[in-house]
Amino acid sequence: MNNKTVTLNFSDGRPSIELPVLDSTMGNPVIDIRALASQGIYTLDAGFTATASCESGISFIDGDQGLLSHRGYSIEDLAYKADFLEVCYLLIYGELPTLEQKSVFVDSIRHHSMLHDQINNVFRGFRRDAHPMALMIGVTGAMAAFYPEAQDVFDPKIRDLAAHRLLAKVPTVTAWAHKYNKGEPFVYPQHSMGYAENFLHMMHATPCEKYEVNPVLARALDRIFILHADHEQNASTSTVRLAGSTGATPFACIAAGMASLWGPLHGGANEAVLKMLEEIGDVSNIPEIIKRAKDKTNPFRLMGFGHRIYKNFDPRAKVIRETAHEVLNELDMNDDPLFRVAMELERIALEDEYFIEKKLYPNVDFYSGIVFRALGIPPSMFTPMFALARTAGWVAQWAEMLSEPTIKIGRPRQRYIGPQLREFVPIDKRGS
Image 1: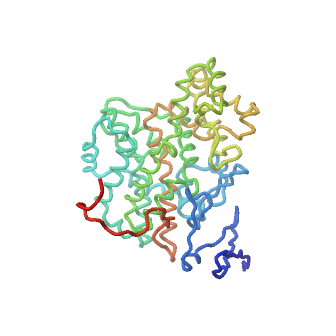
Image 2: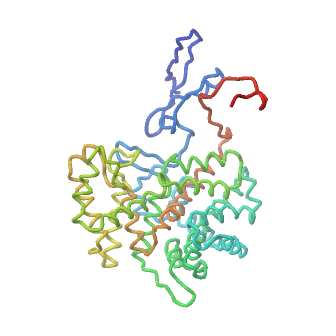
Image 3: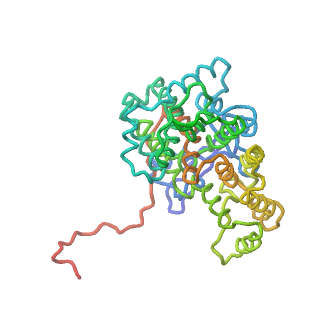
């Protein structure tokens, strides 16, 4: 039994409060401050940098050690030894599947990959040049109208079905958002194909031209999906949990997560990296760029370096770096100018004292845009690709929260700094 506590003493004479300190299976202990509310005391933590908003057994990050694990398995083991749907199963159900469990799960995902025919009309309500994320948010939210039974979120079987539907349908929605932008006909999912393979086919095939999916590229994309599947209580995951705490339909919750992810400070970083590489253009321009990056008076900063959580090398970056080389070797693109710029920036970041001292290592966003570009995926689709993969973590976190017997609606407090109560003055008596 854990008997560790901390005592909170007040200088205004009110009684002290004893708060329990809870151990974690990995990572730092947390102070349970829930008793403060009954005493009329709240804490202020803008950005939630020191606040645990929930208890979760899904994923864990140790930023100092450069560790990311899902249900106790390191991200490296999962990326190299599992496939994406195995990881989805692990996130949702807590254990890696047996052969039989995986077969049933994969069949279920394939079975639900089609979209209702009337959803075509939802797409057509958007402008052709609408951002793919706007399409994804709108269409995913609209699916609630086609599956009203999903509203019964406290039924485990209904939650399970909703999770399968979302994992199956979001890739179709993502690929169709791309097709809609291009003005090409929608390509329907193929049950004979694997998850990443099927997505690439829906992205690039047309009714008049067969698209042969390269297995090396499909495996690379599957690995990228694994790397982005979940990442603790980030902004979009917290958004899904907050929306889900109200009992909202899962389609609305995932659409809310997509909306949060769309922000350039969250899911748009890989697109910003590619834009930066294009602006640099050539290796010969890098010395000037590095000079600007080191200048404290210059607002310019290199995109794709450093991470708010990881104070060591981002473990996902190590994996995706190798994946980038595999893809570019397969496509004979090692002489690609942007790739040469990226590799030179990487070399400098790993050798230059300035970057080492500030722990500005290349992160997963630095490489993912390069791989997506090689796969024929345009920059406007980079954040949708992130949303597709992160749907796995979102549905797992949503389901975990709703299975808790003590679930409470999210209701953050605030420190009010506005005017005190004052008398209302009629408009004809107010000064100019």
